[in-house]
Image (cartoon, rainbow, N blue to C red; front, side, top):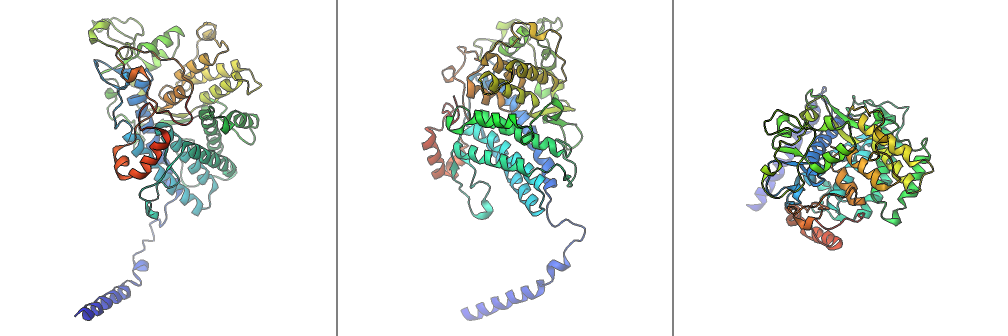
Amino acid sequence: MKKLNQYILIVLLAGMVSCTEDFEEINTDPNRIERISPGTLLNPILYGISSFNTSRADAFTFQVMQVALPFPNASGGAHRYDITENAGNSTWNTYYRWLINIKEMREAAIIAQDPNYEAIALTLNAWVYSQLTDSFGEVPMMEASAAEAGILRPKFNTQEEIYSKLFEDLTLANSLFTTTRPMVFGEEILFQNNVNKWRKFCNSLHLRLLLRVSNRPEMNSFAKMAQIIKDPVAYPVFENTAESAILKITGVTPNLSPWGRAIDFTTFKAGSEFFIDKLNELNDPRRAKFFTQARELDGITTIGYKGVTSGYDGPDSQFGFIPSNHNVALVQAPMISLILTYAEVEFIKAELAQRGHLDSAPQIHFENAVKAAMEQWSVTMADGYFENPKAAYDGTLDRIMLQKYIGLYFNDYQQWFEHRRTGLPILPKTEGMLNDQKLPVRFRYPLAVQINNRENYNTAVGRMGADDINTKVWWEK
């Protein structure tokens, strides 16, 4: 009986092969693209990551960096450093989801023998992995996104390994860009197929990441950054605001605001006293762009720009006024999503010059950076802005980092990352803050990772010290 069953099975399989020999030929749709192009993936990647990052700037960075906070809110919240175990879940899941698409885009570019799209994929991969590793510390990279190869529990890589790979990839990407070759797979939404701008984004990102790890002497960051800056032919970077990596969100489907209802951006929110007072000291024209004016309790009489105390203790009624709030227009399309700007490049140059690694004057780069940081929001610098002693360059890193902090407003996690690198600006501490009034420096790994990739998780945590919001990452000050 067993042999009979085997014979029947063999006959059935033979029949299936016979019947399907020409199945592929018969069922091939001549009007359908058989293989995905790298351009098909590019716009969804750009929009998906940028819109997520913009929403996280509001949901997390604004709070921990004391830019804005929930109001009324008598207890808890990230502005009080009350960070939940799942605070980083969306970051982990979103970035890894898009990294799979970036990997597919690079593979498609290699098959298409298109070096520009391969270079773009390498640049995007470096951008997203830097965000991921700076949020958590060690993360899977070399074995990540490899389920098809049978790797379901990827090993974690150290930050040194990750950054070394990112620098290698960005160097390769810069060499691959070919400005004489057009981008043929449809128009992309960031630079409208301008290969030179993509190359400048690649090298500007290289500067950002070298600066990020500059506290590690073995990375020789400052010398490498100076080499890039001093050779603009081989390593072009952003030279004006118009070249910046700023995604314009048009409001035309599918390029929509991350806020389905703009009112959600302003409901139960307030500007922080710390951030708004800094703008007030500078008499900064960005105040009206970022915030509404505070009002008396009558809800009508305006009283200038006033925020509420970070991590305040006690009842909300203690303030006696209606505080400044977000300007709702910031999230109404057409709007912008900051990725990496010319202003940031000039702040990087200012810091290098201030530290003695560039021959140019740090004041020039500082003033260029501040002006550009206003331009990116379509704000005009007032005449005499730098005549204010609070705004003038005073030779210190503190002054550069204060303006960089303001310049990185709404730029994903960058304010948080840069504060962790430098400790600047010095943020307020209040009795209502938790975590011993210490700024959290990373997200904890998602619970699903702890359960499903336990062995590799334990190895990574053992190297780092603890899966804790106070465990500093490898490059941190």
